[in-house]
Length: 101
Image (cartoon, rainbow, N blue to C red; front, side, top):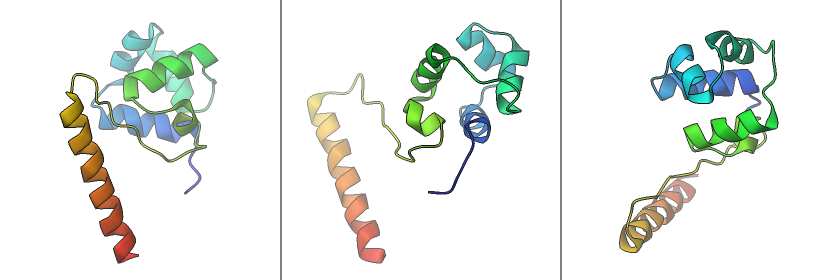
């Protein structure tokens, strides 16, 4: 896994989700400058804020901290059959990628 800092991961997640710093700040209940400080590594979020960020972006706190590169998929609202299809697709794609490598 390529080493990434919390600040670069946060900015990448925020921009990928289409949020401005102000929009993310509103979701977190902080000021825009706090989000900016996080992205500039001038402040570190509290554990509670890390948990809120992980919920907003549907990633683990370890992913946010650059300790794990696993991605999660939010399957809430899907039926059991839908979830089974998603799992099967993941298995198929993983097998395809392993065969390539």
